Image 1 (cartoon, helix red, strand yellow):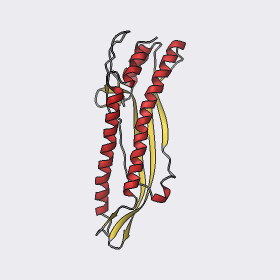
Image 2 (image 1 turned 90 degrees about the vertical axis):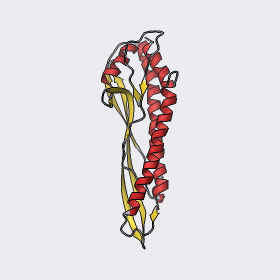
Image 3 (image 1 turned 60 degrees about the vertical axis):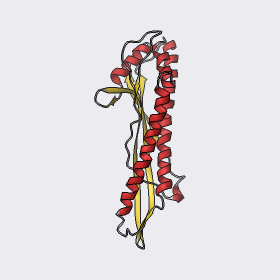
Amino acid sequence: MVRFGGGNHSAGRCVKTIFLPCVLAAVAAALPAAAQTEWQAIEEVRPYSISGRTGAELYESIGAQGPKAGVTGRVIAHTTFKLTWTRKYEPQGNACVIVTNRPKLIITYTLPKPSAALPPAVKSSWEGFISGVAAHERVHGETIKEMVKEIETMSVGLTVADDPDCKKIRVELTRRLGEISARQRQRGRDFDKVEMGDGGNIHQLILKLVNGP
């Protein structure tokens, strides 16, 4: 998720930006081993409208119209996801085993989109900017999919002894899911730190947009 850095910008001036990690929310578990290759994430783009006839005007419009983050901030773009599972616990003797875990993963990329046609030079500049921002958000999407696959590997066949009522296994699953989710969020923060810091890829894209035509 890219946070908007407000203010007036002109050629030769540095654009200050603040960035936050990808926004995430999920209900997690896993998929049976036999079906691990069958599921596909649903990926959708949700545009929001901005206006302007120059790169600087488009960027200022992003600051006014971008998705909200936190109490007062707005972002240029962000990636969110909804993850739900069809899960079956099965008592086997005195133990409990997860025998079915089928995921449904929907990833949503929220990106800015000009509401009107742009002058040719500005259009070229904008296309370079938005393609770079979209590629950045797709990396977050890939880490989400990798997280789901890691959950699958961990949880399919997960067995907890002395749990005929399948209660202890739920506690153990929740603990492991928390660890996997924390690693995924840290990956996002590490990626953003490189991409969005001064001189990073996204920072450079913003500079080119704002200081261009």
